Length: 504
Image 1 (cartoon, rainbow, N blue to C red):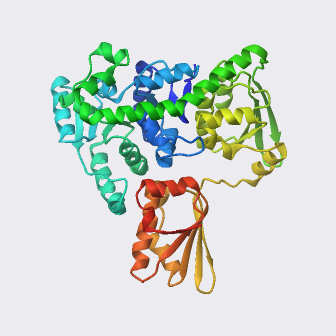
Image 2 (image 1 turned 30 degrees about the horizontal axis):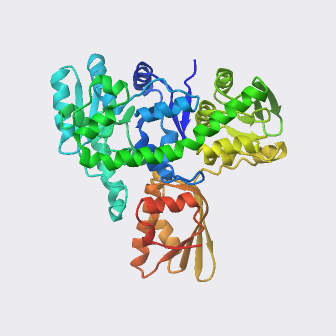
């Protein structure tokens, strides 16, 4: 049986239960020796959504956070409004799973299974106090350590963040924990994990926000009946009205404005399908391309594209290693699509790309494109869309990835252009030799052309901070040109845009 994913405003959320996620987490620990890739679990509430997405369909408020959530190994609904929205989108999520529920549950399970945990973050030394309380409650629990460091994700201090992060990660890695609880709040905890993922040697990390305060008693939790009925927000508002009323009002209004068009559109489309819609099953064919030694898998998607045929598609995606495959998704029969299908495709595409295979979309209608736009998901799919099968063949045989990061120098007499391509993130930053880039620029006028830079995170922005510092010592500066909208927005979210001379 597959896991469904409901896409809520462009964020795919796992449709799982507490029992399911617990099993997956311990499964990640068991398989870590064979596949030592750190996993991240995000517990998402409405505050996450409104911090990530803009009110406009074609805009993203926080591109870095959105990218992290879409790449997270598990994303849970930590908020009843998300469950209510999923039902209205005809893609109901099974259960609310919060960071404050996972923290005590997993520490208890870890005490029984002799697993160790590390507590990171928290205010007022709450990580230490929470660890002491849980250790008394579960004497067999292995506390690997606790730290409440100062973490920055924006401003001038960002320049030194990678160095301070490295020391912190080394400290955590030495204790060899099985689970790292990160209580830094949204979006700091997600950004910190992502920029250190390539250094961490911890099987599972979980963003838990302010959950330490519930353990220590600094914040009181609502009674169980209020939690289950979706009234916990009312209890918390009663406990801390001056701090929370503006946040809750803002969340309620913004989330309502963002989700309403998708709900209305879904209702209209369901009515249309019942009146005159045609039913098509998924159809899968395979052809071998002797020129490129690639297997082309053509998946003609079903109509309505809900959840019925997802199992058959999922089985097709589970290919043996070593095979080169192009997955070509045809929407020719699709008139109606819901949140389950959008979330399923987003996660399916992520898995395909991890395996090194390619994805193409053909025959997509304006109606389906509009559904994806209203659900804030079109930006995810647009790079895969081909106008026809000849374009699929051309792009398939081209073999170039638009995501791998690279840069090149275009030098003239007294100027040099540095052209950047792909995605610049923390892992790529760790490979860059910044002094070498500065030496290649020398005393010439310099421009960084970012026209083909698809994505940058806050770690990537550090490259420009450091180059600015190095070049200013030589009384040199540089310009940055042709930023796309999301790259420019990341410079704004790090509060560093004004430092640079941006043209075009």
